[in-house]
Amino acid sequence: MDSTAITQIQETAHIPEMMEMVTSNSDTPVALLPPGYTAVSMEEHCTNANHFRMKYKTTSIPDYLEYCMDYAATGAGCFVDAQSMSAKAIFDIGEPHKPGHKFHTAALEMQKTAAYKALLQMQGKRLSQRDAAEFIEDWADTIIAVQSDGSEGTAKDAAKGLRAITIDTKGSVETKVGDMGQHMTAMEKIEANNANTIPPMIIVTCAPYHGLKERAVHLRVQISFPEDHPNQAVPGGPIITLRYIGKEEVEEMLAEEMKELIMDGLNVPDMRVRIGSVS
Image (cartoon, rainbow, N blue to C red; front, top):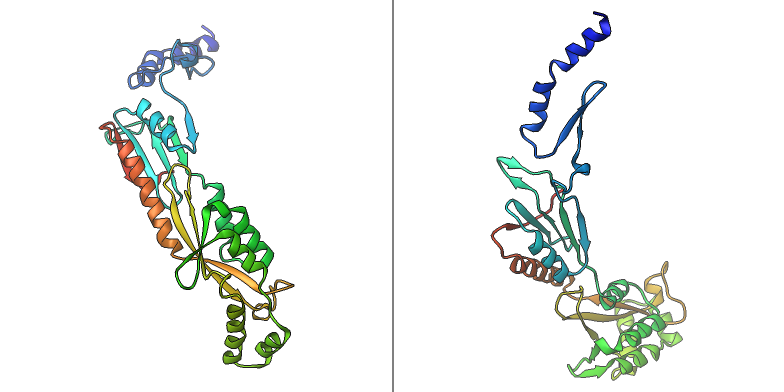
């Protein structure tokens, strides 16, 4: 008997034991292929797969909930990340004593609406009169202006008032050489000349994210002089800044609303919902 035959006998002698090891804890059909008798999955040749291997992604809460309900099974879990306004469901997590492979997942990524995106892009920036007025005109159907006496005005009038703001040369010079009192006098002059048209606040009513309810976002209208920002002055007039009032509080409420929608929608015994994220 030559050395090749001896080697083959030695390798094949352990095949039954090897087959027992690779198949005893698996439903996947396996073949041991020479040389070396490497274990190879035969699942792709079977009529059905042994596992779902899918990574579903959507921006729609109803579609996400429907998908999760369709595939919810014992050992499934959903993790809601309020900070990133997202959620991830894993359908084959398994149990503590019998973990799954985590092949089948569904991800929800909340998308901001166009109106809310535009609002976030503008808030806090130093805008020219034209940019501030055009933002209000572009989203006029979602905006109301609040005057200093509490009365409501139209977006059209607010935009017109912002376009009409002027600073006289004398007032500008005074702010460069004078004290805070002179600065306030110049600002008061602007407000007095435009008292009926410059709103101290505008309210944008929109759904910040698709699938969430509408909310009223308050933006404080602030006017400053170009010389207050020597490195970022807006040429040709005063600087308009729209300050998002209570931004962090609003974001917390949005996150809470998303969590409640998902937790209420996935109220099934087979789908455990937790706050947090997994990787």
